[in-house]
Image 1 (cartoon, rainbow, N blue to C red):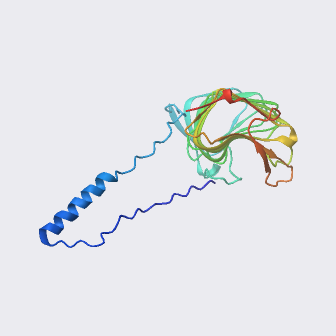
Image 2 (image 1 turned 120 degrees about the vertical axis):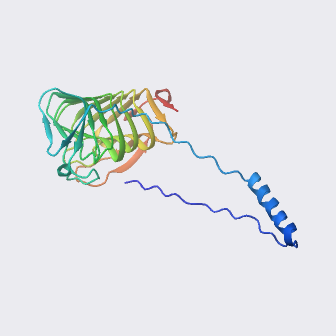
Image 3 (image 1 turned 30 degrees about the vertical axis):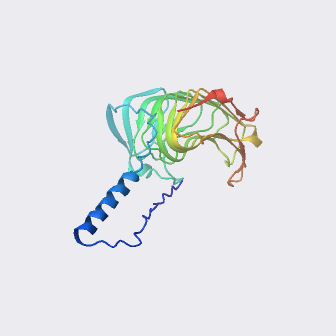
Length: 277
């Protein structure tokens, strides 16, 4: 979890070395000095927060989920908010949390809202499509992709991921289009230390992210991963890392950073592919 430390600064005013005034004259003099100091030191303007880019639709209904819902064929939630119950987890970074939805190979999950706390979001157990899926408050991860070859995230958005939004564990290609995220650690991460590692391809198009956020995509260059970016919009942070490269491993160790930015081999984009607001 990222911790932000805010320090309060105290400004000391200049002391009056010697003011030899008495009675009403002293009171009048001090009042005038205070008024002058206030006029010369206006209060600092409040720092504006970036505008939200995740427009979560109004839920059509609420449903509490106590056990993972298995999706074996295309399912349209019709805008229902699915709220994880206590049995799925508390929405923190505990690795033992359960998914709200488990999507089978070849299925599409669409038009659902994952409420707070987010537990472990959605597990795709093969090729899958998540269309217009929203997370109000990401738990461990918003979605995890594994055991397939092609995964698609179309539209939708996520808010409040202490670590990752989209976790890419399986091999193949993860396509992300029209997606939005705000307040996150890494928006999409190729697993850096899974027991089974393989080459992964991430394609991002029409993605918008809002600060605070550390990294849009993280990939493992030693396994041949690539991340391709087009039509990316970053709101409120011109220091955000677009593409972070790592040296991954299959032993569960924390992967080491190996570089960031476009390199023509793993992180694929030009300056024109990224815009800032």
